[in-house]
Image (spheres, one colour):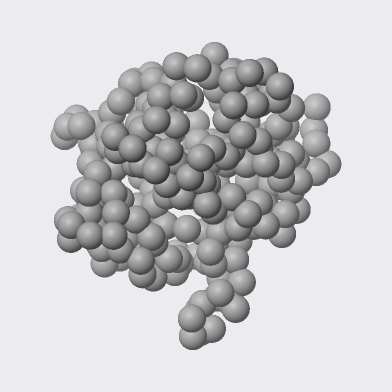
Length: 249
């Protein structure tokens, strides 16, 4: 059944700290965001099936213990495997931003070339060896299949804020398939962290599950740019998802 106002599940846990900005971006795009703690899903008090979009915001889930996003990734991978699988199979949308991208990769939901749950890539420590907080230019990879980034400008300007943002596929075969499947979505113009092939964001084979290290929710208005000289590059990403959900879910 088509939804007039898509419901967005904003996933939270200990250490999540970009949930409010992410919810505001979806609200501005025309959606109806709701904060849901991971424990509510595991216990069954809340159901993923009641939402059309799920967002995994940035932050430091569980203090990035073990590795960035690893514990939350394991909860999705082992505690909620069936529910997440049904959510994706039913045609719904997922976005992971920064720490959320790390979670999607380490749970095997991205890039999901062979199958969901297979760990085919990682996000590891920046080449600089330090946490980086800066603005970066990004370009859309040609012919990418991502629903979230359709009709965005060829180049957009977004902030990054991460210490483990370097994208690394597990092998050359995986990297080749990412390109052949048009799953590479965004690339850094000037690679800040050493990511392989300048990769800043990827999607799954359906184009509906999207992860990126830069923060689109932090540039949805020109007022958020430090010099107010760059048009907001992030809002269209959220609008695309909301419109897709309105028309298809």
